[in-house]
Image (cartoon, rainbow, N blue to C red; front, side, top):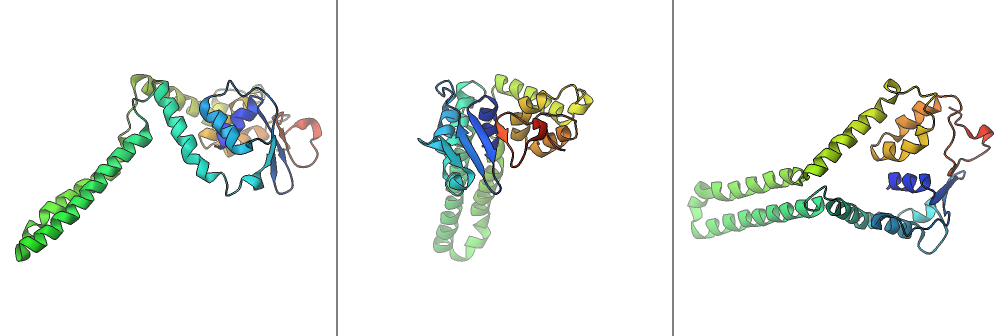
Length: 226
């Protein structure tokens, strides 16, 4: 969610102003018709019909929109041919199957106890096997969504890009590559490296603050203070 916000800001759809204890998000008026479906929904969920929203306004109101955005993101992967099925639907299918096996194990144990009585403990291996299979399915469900060949290739490229961002000082002279700070900030955020990314460039003299972000207080030279 945060990386999408930063990505849309980088591309000129949103500006962010920091206040003492709040952040203000503003639409810039740029045509949103060219955004992808989940990005358009993101803008609608954040702003509605308003041009400006504060972070405090969104607190405790946005979390129920996340499953909708996640579903659309997964659908986007399928439409681009990166996955044959939505990971969410695959995990749900295996989860339902595991639930059915748990129920079957319970019913089998009850029926054995009623009809066989003392021998139920001897045949308890049947419901135990069903229950064990259900646990294995629940654990395996997370790994069941598969990628297409194009999806596997895209994953490899993104993992390589992640390694590049993580160790960018090994590949670039940061003082000469200050312009990549804002360009790649959305991706560093998506990889969970935004704090590390900001610290790297905050230590570089005259790294410019993104033009779409206005921090609280004066902006001498519009550079990070470090």
